[in-house]
Length: 165
Image (cartoon, rainbow, N blue to C red):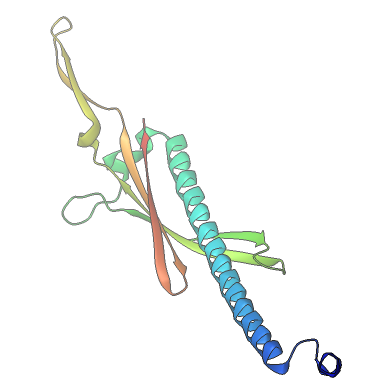
């Protein structure tokens, strides 16, 4: 009976220290995961913004019409090739909450638009009935829009293609 009176109950100092260490490691893992999620959110927001910029540029050039994209209206290099159209900077700003605090996220984009040559989408037609020689007609232009931006000291980019008819 004297042994049962002397038995101790509760946690010892070793158990408490081990539990504190385990909780500390778990806290660090959760904080590391939170930082990774924050970076993923910003990277996804930047990519979504780049997709929006590229699609807006394709839609704007499509609204101008095919005639405004003819080879005669585009700038050429010394070899006679069409130069890409560069638009820099395009700034997009969002109100976001990646974390507990609401932040303003601003991303600067650079767009490079490559337009195909007229002869890539050209048809020839002739009419023996009307006595006309072959007539060439440009029916479309391909647009390749490369949008790039900086994220964590690296350059990210996407390319979106479209056709203007």
